[in-house]
Image 1 (cartoon, protein in one colour):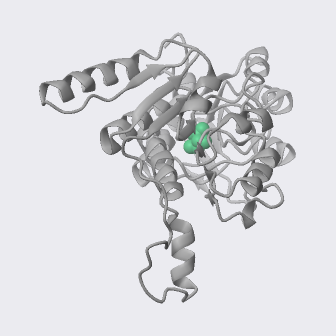
Image 2: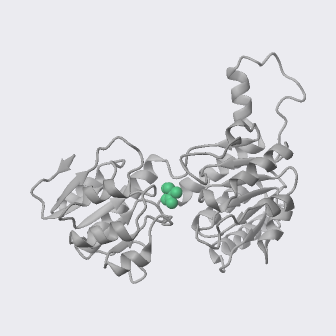
Image 3: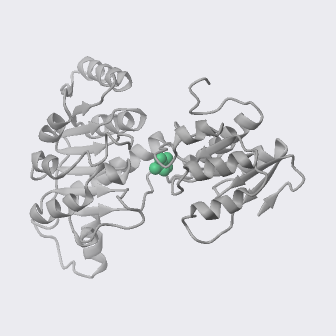
Length: 348
Ligand code: DGY
C-alpha cells in the first residue's frame, strides 16, 4: 500500500498500524509511505531487507522483528538514518549495530503506560477470582446452581502486592492496586523509583487526613524479599541478559503456595518450563501471562493449566494507546529525517 507516491522521503512501515494520524503526519511532511501488506504475522530478516530495497530513509518496525547487524547495514546502504520500533521495549533491537551504521533508533514510551498497567491489573484480578475458569464452566453448561465452594478465589484487599521493576508501568500498576484495591505494597527496583515513592507517601497522607487505615509499603532491598512476602507479584523489568529467567525454579519455590504471578513485560524474564512444572505441583498457585518465552508458542503443558490465565501479548492493546504508539513511531522517523525531537533519544 503506497501513500503519497511522489513524496521525497521513502518511509517503510513493516505493518499496518491503527489510526490515520501517523499516515497523515508522514505524508504532510513529504514522505512516500509504503505499508507492507504481507499476510504472514512475523516478517523474516530477508523479507525486511527486500522491503528496504535500494532507497529508504526510514523504517517503522515491530517487536517481532530481529533488528540486528543485517537490517541496519541494509538500511544504511539504502541511505536510511531512522528506525522506529513500535513498542516501548526494544530487546529486539541491537542498538550498538544501529549506532555502527549511523541509524537513530526510537521507541514509544509513555502512551502505553496506563493501558499496560490496566492489563496487569486485569490479569491479577482474573487469576485471583478465577474468572477464565468460571467463564469456561458457564459456557460448558455446567452451572446447576449456587454453591458455597464454587470458584472460591482470593480477596485482594489487605493482601500485599509485589512489584518488580518500578518504572513507568510498574508504578502505574502499583498505584492501581494500592488505591483501587487497598493492597499493601512491596517493590524492588535497581533505581530510586521516586515516582512510586511520591505516590505512596502522598496517598498515605491522604488516608491519614481522612482517618482511614494507612497502607503499609516498603522498598525491598532484594528481589527475593518481594517474592517471599507478596501475595500478587507483577513483573515489569526490561529484558536484557541480567533479567533473563529472573523468575526460575528456585525463585518460584520462594513464593507463597497461593501466590499469583503476573507478567506483562517480556516472556524470557520467566523460565516458562519451570512455571509449568510449578503450576502442576501447586494447584493453588496462579499465573496471569501476557508474554511467552518463544512467542507465538507456549511451552508444552501451559495451555492445559487451569491455574493459568493466558492472553496473546495484548497489554498495550487499547485503541487510544495503539494510535498513540503509531503516531509516536511516525514522529520518531520524522524526527531523524526532518530533525524533529526523537522519543527515546537521550539528547532530546
Ligand atoms: C511494548 O511496547 O514493548 C509492548 O510489549 C507492546 O506494546
